[in-house]
Length: 318
Ligand code: TXA
Ligand code: MG
Image 1 (tube, rainbow, N blue to C red):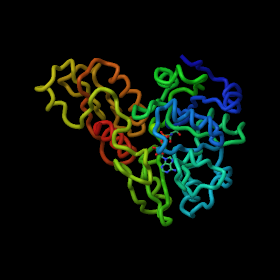
Image 2 (cartoon, rainbow, N blue to C red; image 1 turned 180 degrees about the vertical axis):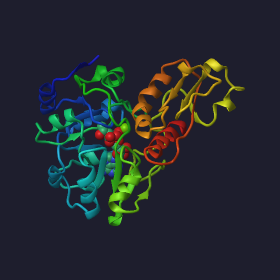
Image 3 (cartoon, rainbow, N blue to C red; image 1 turned 45 degrees about the vertical axis):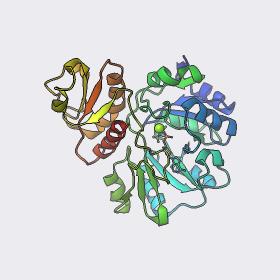
Image 4 (cartoon, rainbow, N blue to C red; image 1 turned 120 degrees about the vertical axis):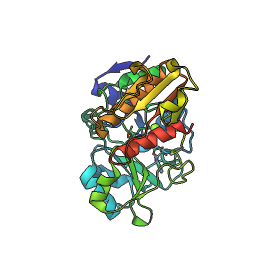
């Protein structure tokens, strides 16, 4: 298992030496390495078992540091950055020569994120290079929202996990690109579409495609537990499975036909932020039980409910 601790200086030293460190952000934990060091970047792909065609996000301490890594900043991007950065937003911008092609998987665009987590901020402000950091999970599995989640799966392969506590948001960042200057959501995430629209007006939503050439990592089968997952009403599964075999993901209320310990209730009060925060840890917990199926209920399609439903649909699409 990896060493887990809160020593930011040690993490800085490892990263400067070209090693990988798992880092906390407010969305999910990331598997970080020097984005300008090809050997560190190739290690990231290897440890995650991630295909080389799936590009990585670069992380910087402030939006003012972005200019050397991009060619231009569209007006709408600047407006979104001013409102939501640092925070759970990632912008797809035209990359400069500074960004290695390996990071963007050959794409002329680079994904840029400024995490708000105080530990990530402390770390990034001590580095003179951006960090490439995908979510710190094996490719295709649920993203980690605690240091222990990272340790369970990637622990043996990385020297250090920087512990910043459980992630506040619990969903990955919202990815926004600007094809022809028009703000377009390529992944629903921690900033709700309505909030983006309050700043830049109507946005296009292109997320949730299994073959989206502009966001190759947006495959349907992401975020999946090992236990088969389906969307629907647990009532319909009672006849097909024994009660002990059925897990449930519910928004506010338990399903009465299945023991409570087999159910993830996301937010009894119906709060989408609480639901987001609890989703991935809850899915892991259910996945650790000897269940044959997990039946998930969708949330109302608004606020973070849209991003949560996106993750549930992808997990069920496997
Ligand atoms: O919240 C987050 O964004 C977390 C934390 C650690 O920052 N990171 C994260 O990274 O979720 P990852 O690699 O698991 O997901 C990033 C997604 C990938 O699926 C990738 O396809 C897409 O962003 N992406 C990255 N760079 C891209 C690019 N240049 N063009 C299109 N899509 C890109
Ligand atoms: Mg990921």
